[in-house]
Amino acid sequence: MVLNMEQLFFNLLLAAIFSIFGFVLLFVGYKVFDALTPAHVDHKIFEQGNVAAAIVASAFILGISIIVAASIAG
Image (cartoon, rainbow, N blue to C red; front, side, top):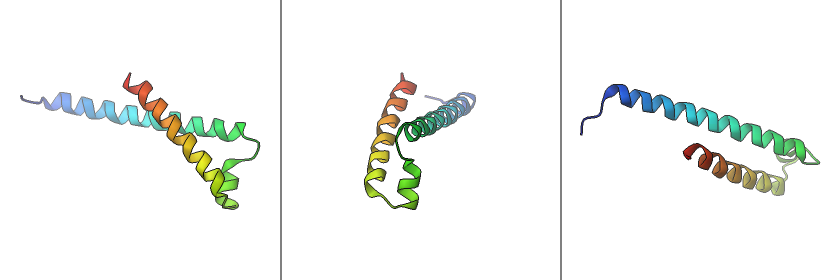
């Protein structure tokens, strides 16, 4: 099986586009989550060192990552 170089570059370009799109969706989802919580999660994690807020935020990020990956994969 011979791989066409043009097809290879096209597939790499598509992979880069979908990964950027997935990262943007993940970032927007996290910002919406941060806006909907009563306290700012970023402030709780980075300035106050709240481990519980970090665990909740990481669980949310993992959940959204699974949803975004499934929607991109089709």
